[in-house]
Length: 383
Image 1: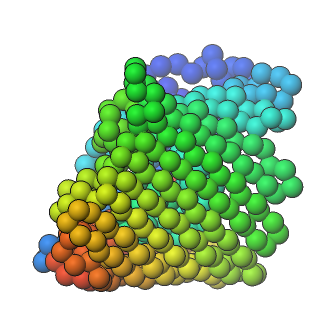
Image 2: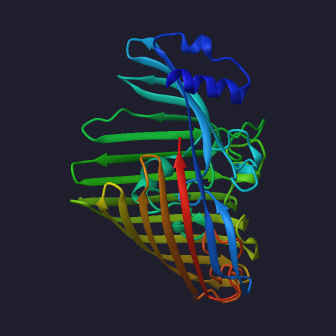
Image 3: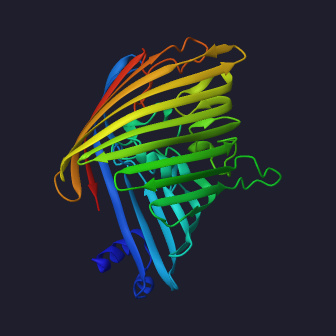
């Protein structure tokens, strides 16, 4: 199997990995995932729509990861992960070759792991696995506009990350992303911290992230083509808990996102007025029931309150989301699933337009009304 993986990697990359594979304490693995399906959206700009879409339960990807034993419990490690669209064959994440992840570093059995490159922040690493979208549901059940990045809409460039080993169920870590700008050390830099405790039945986590001038430069920690919002500063923090009772998993997550001088979003374009302050408070309840090893169902409810403050006025849009998912494994590597998501928006007024209409993350456009429904039938294959 190892020879097969290396041969496949040689074919894809057009280079030889044989010298690496010959070392007894080294390994290189080629892996991937393909997620494909059909979506029906009730209202996108006033019309219903049927689309073939890729990467909803999980983003379609292929990657290489490996390690080399350096002795004394220390390993050199790397991971290169590509995202792509199955239907068009196009690269994802702004056309990057390895847009999902690209890093190298050291892993120590005594001190933890230190990596450098394009990586996930601490919210994604520690808090997101307690949400529905960051665990079993995927992209469709993100909080509005994925405002807290629990669905990893963006990654952080030029970053150094430390992740501890697990001590009695407790793990912690942090990340710092450099601006790479001469004379602008703090411009478009980022940092995050997080921790998680995993017990026999309970998992608890908390995380914090701050990005200065997200999307403000092309070479900083969060590039223009990779951000959710354009703002002077973005802060995200939250905490959550999951509790397991036999085959059932119950969860609650709270997250808060604050943006200063927000001028727009990749989802909704420019706001009607620059927001001196734009905030989101997300409250999520989720549940999953594992009927058998091959089948589960899950449900989530999320309530989000947005606070839009500007020189033209203030408003408080609210969003209620209900999501359902059923999944069945045809084999150890292939499953089929059905998802449904409904969103109702209210209280937005006209000052914060277009935040006052329903817009499910994953739909191709906002609804022309306060309501939007999206359902999906998909198949997922891993290799």
